[in-house]
Image 1 (cartoon, rainbow, N blue to C red):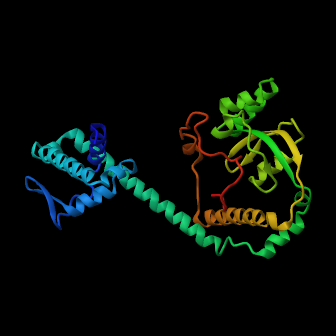
Image 2: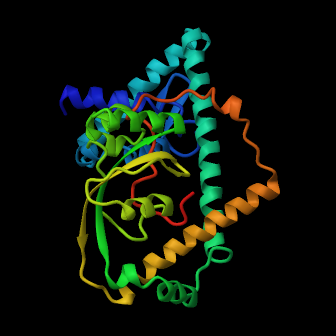
Image 3: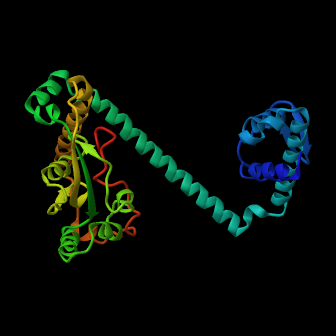
Length: 308
């Protein structure tokens, strides 16, 4: 085995000095001072070896050299403890920071799992959409399905009405839409493309955005459009007629659209019952990331249902 491999595995192993090393039961394959290295521990470390090295440690020679690496690691660890490294301020600070990050990650995971699990439960009950509801919606909104169209558009997303009005002023002064989008849009994906979005059809975007986009003529720019994600200025780039599709093709699209609507209504009801309040002056103090580094925007076609 070459020395580069030895160094790589030693570094990887050193990152996990505390992982899986407390259990001392079972046959002992090596001893470093008073510290035993058990067969079970070595077997576990072998299983956790990076895939690129699995072929080598699958050989007898590879396993022998890997054991020698573990012995070397334990030797360094033992001496570090004997020399009081566990009381070193920088070491203690790093360990404390790691524990804090781990605690936060666990809390984030628990919260995310609870939200996802509860949403799944809601989809089977409060947010459930029956076939009859889908059919009724289709019957009441036949035009976009009998004559489907696909829209090409660009948008500029900002956080406040004042910012949106400033965008309109710049457009009226003759600045290119694409330049302003790159300068100020809070949608990083489309901002890099001059505000341009992927083509979309009826029922794929949030209703306020979609309604405004479909109402525009080719090349026309909208007034300020507010959605739950912020304030948009929309430019219609083009519109294409699509061939009609059978009901079965978009039945599930309608179902997801109705689920989103039910979810929005459910959230509004819960916020009212819980007495949700936002302190606007304090909220105004929130710092913002630089333009082009915000999260996923409002204007992108909805991929998950219901949208949170």
